[in-house]
Length: 165
Image (cartoon, rainbow, N blue to C red):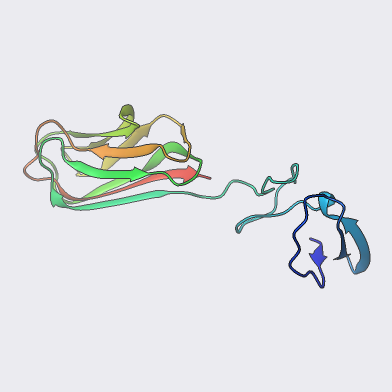
């Protein structure tokens, strides 16, 4: 990846600023408009037009732990998403106390609309995550809401939903 040498703070309204760059041991000068940046960490992917990160998708997993017993329609999680992400609908779920009295279904919502569920088995206390692949944009709300009927034995739930950004 090219490195920029001796760059000082510059304010310009054009792409005509010439910057010294070292690439593969060779020094050359390029126009500001020819430089494509990388934002964040990760493995560089194909570079797009200026302003795009050029990164391969990075993991953005949602981790949820709720240590208490669930009441009816318990709000387990409500979070405003800070950047565009895609939840794959795959994940894992366990409970510390259980197994549950009956299969327990927890709803997963995007902006108040269901995108899937997490079902805890009456036999094992293990949960199955079943959500559709969903893209969230900045400002969308992800909610996880407990069942309509409280389960007296299910507590200490842990949920992971896989995603990328």
